[in-house]
Image 1 (spheres, rainbow, N blue to C red):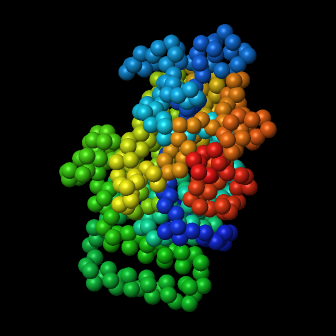
Image 2: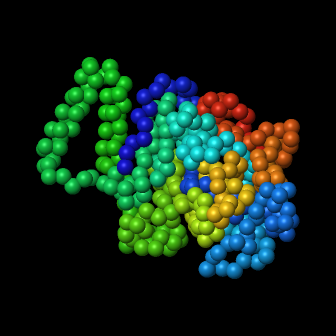
Image 3: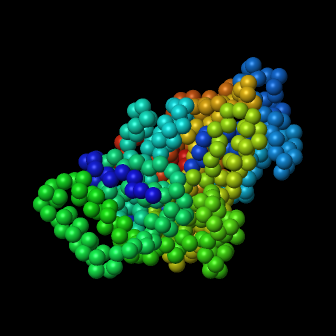
Length: 443
């Protein structure tokens, strides 16, 4: 566990929102390793894209090569939920919520590196080598909303960056539920209460001396130390103790499918989904990032056996989160938490359209993402990838329709739209693009 970034840079933009001025909350769901969009968010018709025409289309659909002991596939295993919205065979229970989803296709990541793609999506900016050139979107959002929440920005097994925002907007980074509980609980100490008070007083005196006050590093370090102490004193750990025998915790385990109460179970993707929703609905956090799937870097034969089921597990976690948010009333308003929380499912890039000589797929620039909740224009498909090699294809940012005269969609277009929905019209992240307004019902 650690505090990611101390926000030591100069604040490039002023904080534009107070907590009460926006009722938006955000959950970013990361699928680690590079997902195969043909199996999930951007499928192709196997009757059209046959192996006989691969030389022209450069697309191996590959559904006939999948090896799954838990199911048998039809010749065309795609799942069609509307005229425009068709999913691959591993979309899982997320398809049940298709009317809540906006699927963005034909997005370009402009990188084939895992770290570069992940950081590109999180910050909306290409990296300089491996170094980020901006703060993560959740960091900006946490800064804009203010510091009233106990943990404004929480990142669970996901990177986060703070280059130019206040220290309170830095993510509290943990590896899973057990690590969060450890961070929130008082440590077992051999010191008595008098010794603890004396140490606290010594630290406070050192932080208040003139030399320390002139040091930005020491000021931010003291703020982080005192912030952690406040978290421990707040007694927040009970809300995340999903291994407890209390009826509420048993209900959470059953809903998310958390199989057990040991540390491994509480570090699972299902437990991270429960953690994210709990942090949001309990008022602990405004922005949460969680890893809901991993092991997707399938260059070899494991593509046929592992890629799909691992994606599906993450999509199922997202489905459980949507259901949980819908079931919780938002602050006695008659609306649900889902009406106020935007969920973003993303990966660093996709797999190649052609299957390689090892029976797997390599790294591709083209990507997709799925967004739901809040003011998101559900039941829509925005943009498309091409029918030759699944290349990025331009779209009209206002309508979402494919348009050669439009723009290639990048992650920064999505971030601009999410910020616009939160009431931020200025380009506070310095992304230098227009918002993807087609994402929003009421842009």
